[in-house]
Image (cartoon, rainbow, N blue to C red; front, side):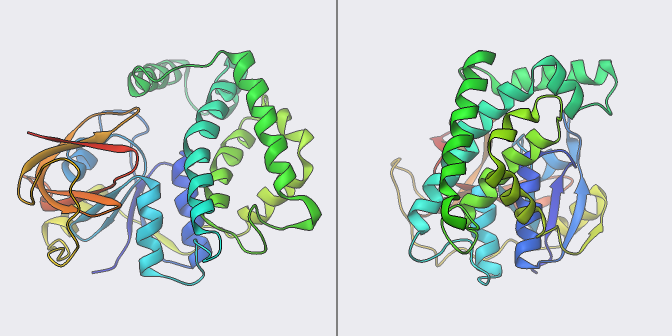
Length: 309
C-alpha cells in the first residue's frame, strides 16, 4: 500500500517543507489535520508518543522526522530527485544545519511578542498562552539564545544564503533544487508569515525571489481525511517487510530487543517497542496499540538516540 497519509497542521513550518516536496515530486496525498499542541490522542496511538510535527503514514508504517520522510519520498518517486549525485552529501549537511541551527535562530527572532502575535494572529490570547507553554515543555533544556543574538545571527545567515544565490543561480546548490532548498525554505516561509518581524529578509532580495520560486511548486493534489480513517488504515494494513534490510549495530542490541527511541535534542518523549530496523541511517520499532493495531514507527538514525529497555 503506497497511499500517503500526512498528519500535520497548516502553520507548521516542517509540515510546509514536506507539503512542498509533495508538490515538487507531484505526489498525491491525504491530509489529516492534527492539534498544534498536546494532547494528540489519535496521533499518539500511531506513533507511541512522538510529539513532533509532521508524521507521514503509509499503511501501518509511520515515518517520523522530515529528514527520513524525504528519504522515503525519494524511494517512492526518484524523479525529480531531492539529492543530486554531485552534491548529495553537501545537500544533506546544509539541510541538517537549516533544520536545526537556522530554524531555532529564526524561531527565537520570530517569537518576540510582535512576531508571535503576527504569526499566530488567528489564536485567542488564551490559545497563544497555551501554545507558549506547550512549546516551552517541548524545547526542554535546549539552549536558548537572546533576542539580540538571534536577530543578529539570523541576519548573517540570510546574508550567507543570499551569497549562495549569486551569479543568477536559481537554487542554493545549482540549477536544480535539492533537499537543502526545502529545508531552508520552511524557515523563510514561517518568517514571512509574521510580517511584523520579517523585515530582516529585505536585505536578501535574491533569497526572497528564490522563496517565490520554491513556493511555486505548490502542494500538488490532496484530499482531506479524518484521524479515524488513518487509524482504520493502520489497523487493516501490515507493516512493510524489513527482514532483508542490513543490520547495523552501535548499541549492543539485536533485532527483537525491547528498546526506546527518542530525539537527542528536544521533544524527547520516548517511543518504545520491538527493534525491527537498525540500518546505517534508520531505526524502527514495532508496537501495538488498541486503536492503531500493530504498526512500525520509523526514525532517522542521525538526531535520535536508542536505549535498550
